[in-house]
Image 1: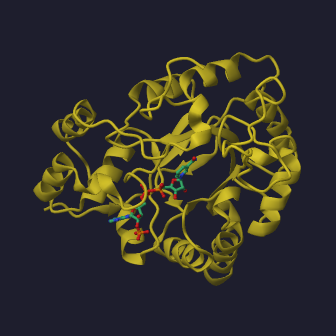
Image 2: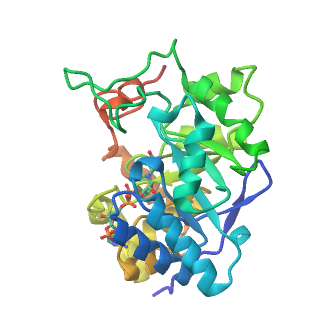
Length: 317
Ligand code: NDP
């Protein structure tokens, strides 16, 4: 029996700032759930909260953060707050971030991520569709993810974002971004789907070599946490007397990524921040899971540019 300990580990971003390795995810939480989960998490000791424009919960998330700071005396500088620029707002990231900050009731975010490396038509809601049901995407030639990134860069000097980063990129897209002469600020973070069914080791190694911190989203397999049924994970959990969630989150921390489990249940919120040391044999066993089961859970239709139909990254863009 091993007693899991609350994670206070941080990683250093290429800006010099520290990012707590375990953060609370907030996707698919209603206003009330989001508020309660964030407040419970902060009271429990979380200092890292991940939200996004398109989750529709920046307002309750920000309210919980502000209420917590008032109640506890914890300073804004002790918290790490991420939001994400949505694809319909890529042509004017400054105005979009200012709107996010207004909803969050914050002066700045610690990290602004470009949510997906593709732009959607603006002015028709968050998920514009063509008559045939397909997404209204802007052609790369009209507005590319590199154009968006360049427009995000000044937000740092304006003190609206302490750092900027990217999400749902593959290696070719990061290479294209880094190779562009107009890109003068290296992304601080890459946030992608990462778990034992999709460990993306090559991408993790690539980012490490380029001093980009990798954040693991949907670490439990997203809605319903399907990874928690995995046999190998449960065997390791039983060996140490801890939950399958603790094993997965501990694995993500041990491989040097940030991990963002989402829960609206205060007991699970609290237990998700607790990690255990895993042996080399445990790590090997978890790393081996993808040889038999390989799966992506977040594969929206606008990811068509990035993923094959089986949910794996296309080798080239
Ligand atoms: P997760 O992999 O974190 O899984 C969430 C699910 O697991 C929920 O159903 C939750 O239920 C359940 N759960 C959480 N902890 C436990 C536990 N200890 N035991 C049992 N069940 C548990 O999914 P997400 O897809 O939400 O990913 C995490 C975060 O990553 C998001 O919330 C978001 O912040 C970010 N994200 C970013 C994306 C991007 O494009 N950049 C895309 C997807 C996610 P319950 O709430 O009832 O506990």
